[in-house]
Image (cartoon, rainbow, N blue to C red; front, side, top):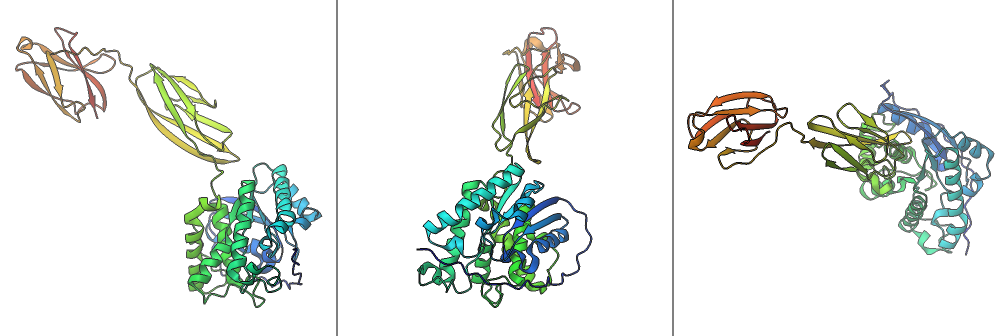
Length: 424
C-alpha cells in the first residue's frame, strides 16, 4: 500500500516584521544550511532563527534550499541543494522531509525516505566531516491526515500521525549519529498545555507565526546548546505568547539535550594516572576526539594520546587534558601528588606527633631520654625551618608559618628518629 503525497502550491508568506533587536556582542558564530520545503520557507524559518540568535548575543549565518513540496529524494538530485551542501562551510545542515512521508507505512518509509536521508547525510559529511546533520522533526497535522486516513488509520488523528513522525525522525538520527531539532515534540507539549496558542495556519498543516517561532527557538537551542530563555526577541508575537514558547522549548529541548543527541557526539575528556616514583603514566579514555593536549602542571605539555611524564621536584600538580574534535573541546583536570623528599621517615617509639595531618598545632610526645634534646622541623628538601629544646615529655609546635605540604619532625641528637607530618 502506497499513499499519495499531497502536493499543493503554497503561497510564500511575507516575512513578518521582527521586533527591534538590540545590537549585542556575538558570543558564538555558527553556520547553518536548511534543506527542506514549505515548512522551512514559510515565515522564513532560517532568517527567523538567525534573528533570535542575534537577540541572545550569538551569530547564525544561514542559507537554505527549500522548494515547495520537496522530498529528500528530490533534494538528492537538485543542483542548488547539492551545490550548497558542497560548499562544506556549514556547522549544521538541517534536513526536513516532506510533511507526510515519514508518517507513512513502514515499507514506504523504508523505500522512499530512509535511503535518501542517508544519502544526504553522506553528502554532508563528504563535503565537511565536521558538519553535523540535524533532522527537523515536524508535527502531525492539526486533525490528522484526512487524505490518507482511509488507507492507513494511524494517520486519522493528530496523535497517530505525530507519533509516527517522531519515531521516524528519531530512527533517521539514530542511524546516522545525527542531531534532532524536536520541533514536533515542542508543538505537542504546547498543544497539550496551551491549546489557545494557534500553531497552525488555516490549512491545519503549515506553521503560523507562533509555530515558526517555536521551531526557531528549538533550532537556536540545538545549534548553540544554550537556553532559549536567553532570547530577547519576540519575533513579532505578543510578549506573553513568546515567553510561553521559550519556556516550553527550554523544558522540552534544553533540559533534555542528550535525548535529542545534542552534545552526545562532542568530545568527552577522561583519563587516569599512575605514579611510579617521579614517572607519571597517563591513560586516555576520551571519546569523540582526535586531538589531545596535555598540561602536566609543571610548565610542560604533550600532544601524545597516552603520554609518560617525569617530574623533577616534589609537589602537587594539576594535570589537564583538553580533548578536541572539529573545534569542539572538553577539558578535565586531575590532581597528582609527587611525594619525593630529601628526607626519609624513620618510625620510632620514642617520638610521636598528633594530630597528623594537622592544620597548625601539633603535640610532640617524647621519652624522658630526649629531655634537653633539640626537636627540629624540616621541609622536604631537608632544610631546618624551626628548632626547639625539649623541656618536657610533651611539647607543642606551631606550623602556621608554613605553607600546606609535607614536613618532618626530627630528634637532632639522634637524626634517625624522624616523623613525617602533613599540614593541610
